[in-house]
Length: 502
Image (cartoon, rainbow, N blue to C red; front, side, top):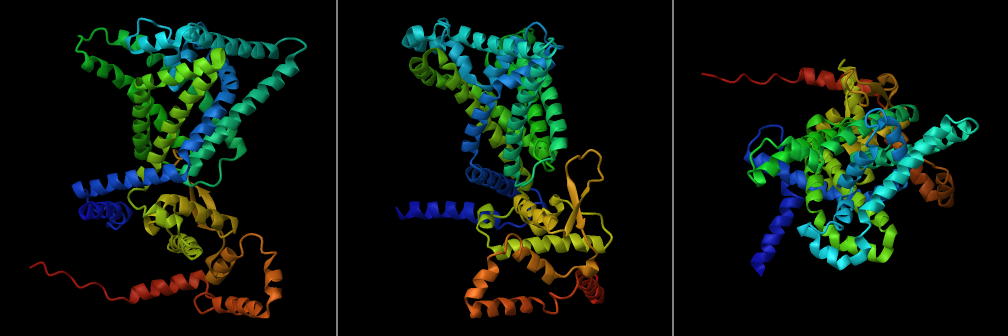
């Protein structure tokens, strides 16, 4: 029993301390550092899933997606009419079944020849006889409504109402995409989303390209297409089925990689986004293969809800799909921060002193680079220098920007559209650390401070002395003078002794 307790204690110490006490991982690549990387990746992802409420957010996104399903189909029909004018219903149906595998089971319950669901069909009885037709009817009604809405815009006498209706539908879709962006921003610790003008342009581009690529991927992922594509291969059983999955896995990984790259309002590197996309794509395809676990739940929902069971069935499928997509986003965040992210739980419990010190440290690093004539710094450089997570640095940088101490400048790289770099917002000879510290402490509403201080004269005396104590030789000195002094001291340091190579 004691040995078991010791082993448990060792495991807890490894996950809570040992993997974070390692030296920076960029120095040398070997088996040990890769073990630490993987352990950190798992730990950061697990902690992020719990901290960010991924399961709850997936439920909220599933509900929002269901509410926006009609408006989404309107826009999809509007865009896809030039590409799939004859079989838009089939393409949308394939895509919905892929995103919500429970719908696939909802349809397959009607197929008595399926060995995997034969028992389920017998148990379900008459409740499953119209499953496929219900889904077809639902999609047909949504598409007909979309076409009627679009045709109403060009109909005499109803043009205004048609335009208003279309704008309302677009607004609903924008709200859904805003919720998605805010969720990914929370994963990355970004407090502010895109500006509305840029947001509308970005969302429209995302919807347009997403419709074309999504419907094309849905068609490519269909079993009939993949089966015909690999007809020339000899039947090697599992090997043939595995090869048939490779193209779909690659395409889905590419789509999710672009999703993780561009949707958060921050710079995401390609390799972390690719890792998150690959894991999420694998989980989504696996989710489709193990969708037979939905059969029992589908039967119960059909028995309980009857003909309207398709709504909760769709909700279940969307929930699991969004959960896997958000887990992929969390993995992207963990992969990008695995090199220099210290124990996340320790940062979450950090005091205001630590947070203020991190903010001042970020400001000093920005000022030092500016003073030395170096280009403005980005979050990646700040995170690597201070060994702090990006979400904490985002909070610190946002404070500095709000206080007017730091300004954002666009990245010089034309390929990076959303990453900002940071430089001082005022001359360094007019900037004092005491002023920065005071601004951080007084940020927000301080209307009650005078009331509280007026209650007790000892408290007022303490606050007055504290303000005066901040104006020490270092705190009252400008940042420019501090950096000049630092540079002079570095110049006076003796050069390192030469190494005797004989």
